[in-house]
Length: 586
Ligand code: FEO
Ligand code: CA
Ligand code: CA
Ligand code: CA
Image (cartoon, rainbow, N blue to C red; front, side, top):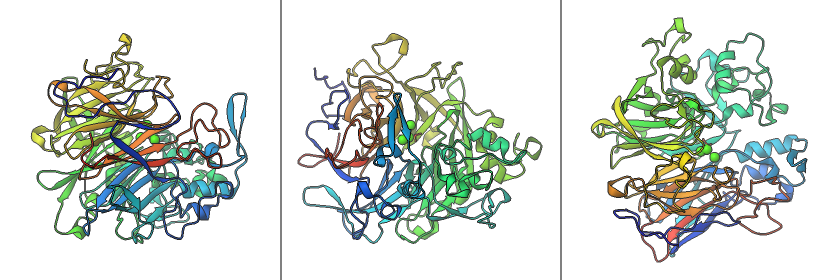
């Protein structure tokens, strides 16, 4: 049965039915077209995708794997010319490589890695910068001749910038300067700055390191707090820098926010150390009323923290070059959500409060490299896995996605459910719309999960239909009309009878807390990267790890989306949603 429009809702679309199948689904009256898929060309002279004969060299010139964050900037020369940024968070070897994975005792087992396979993985990580042109149908197409097109990979030269640059703790055998790093890892969400640069957040970087630190090494506590090394990947077998016994400081050079100037394809991306080192889900940036720049970031781990960075200098809308190092100079704050609904943003500044040499913080670099430990010392609130933190410029509110935490035993006001399987969303009100405020308030917008199951304790409004509820909020977007949209990660795995998708959520008036399903992904996938173009007429969505359900392998994925061709593997892809006949989405 179709849901009645909720009274006062700001969304007019007809919602789709929740469920699980091999395809994606979008609300009636909309088109959802594939923009670009893993292996597609990024340059006019990129090789064609040949899944049975993959090489690292080809992959480095093709669209990477597991698209996550999507950013967009409109270019000045034409309303039909834009620049797309896409993160490639991680790789699924079992789905990528032919003949590599077998199912034994209901478990997927990987074969033996060659150097080439590892280097394909490394080239499939990172990001893509891609010029787009809009055709007469109002749909965007990759402009493969675009002069700004670029692939960023684990081999791209980058610069450590800000307070940690050149510090002894980031020097390695290969880089005695402590400033020159190759590549970026596990770029989950990200952001676009007001001056049009692309921010790539480094999230689960610990998974790429193997080996054992030398006995009694000074980084032992630091690495333990971050789970380094986790050994998820075999890269250390062929690249010593991922072996902490051989290059013990390399892991201090990951876990940062990377800023890329997309206008110059030869620019050296900068790791902005002033924003702290942790498992950054994303980094959404806003210009405050006084011109200072504020960036929000969640640390996606159970019992970790929410942060914001406030710049010292102000954004200059008339001088792009003057903005390029704003993110090197400012103060990082960590959040304490008090039981009375107030919120303290506490500065991570060496020498203030407990952040002293006596407590093991030798200098400001130590505070930033070990931001988690600094947050521990300050008494920040341990959260249920902070994912995207999304400011809304039109309301002065900030939305925090807390995806889940089944290991929580003790509740607190901001994380009110023990064994929180479905997550929740917090709404921060920055005082008087001042995003640089250090004393704010907060309340819970939604506790997620199925409202029919009383013990779940979900709080969607009664106007929310059977299709409208969701669990595991992950990414969020605010559209051109200031409305909130949330995408999810894990509904299929949690066996909710529905896949992940994109839901539209009313936050104002009597419809507050009403959620409607707009788009859902094929089986096995997660929904990432929701991004509306500034004109509100295109929505870009990232379908990540499609087909990754059950004992999926290259030969037997759970779906062959989006090609549905037996000669093609399942492929992560970016989807472009437009309204039939044109107009704003939603
Ligand atoms: Fe990569 Fe926090 O999800
Ligand atoms: Ca993801
Ligand atoms: Ca995520
Ligand atoms: Ca997630």
